[in-house]
Image (cartoon, rainbow, N blue to C red):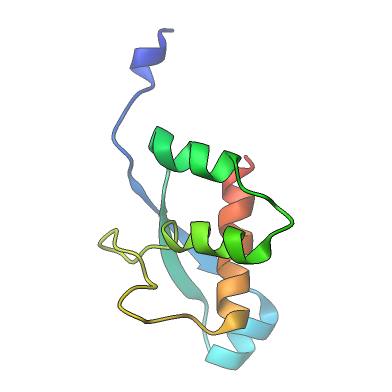
Length: 98
């Protein structure tokens, strides 16, 4: 197989936050979207992160946590509750690690 056969435009993939404490607090699972592949600029940005700098990691994740239209959920001063943000970052990190 040739590598070019694997190249494609990013597609949105739905992620579910279904941690028991989140579901209990909000009454249901929470969904958001991520791209199934990353542009090289975004990949290198993530690869060069200092993993001990939590603030830097959360800022990089901001561009990965998307709505159903592919737009960042956290924009125009809107932010997520910390427990939801932490759960979303965990889900994105797990997905990127595969």
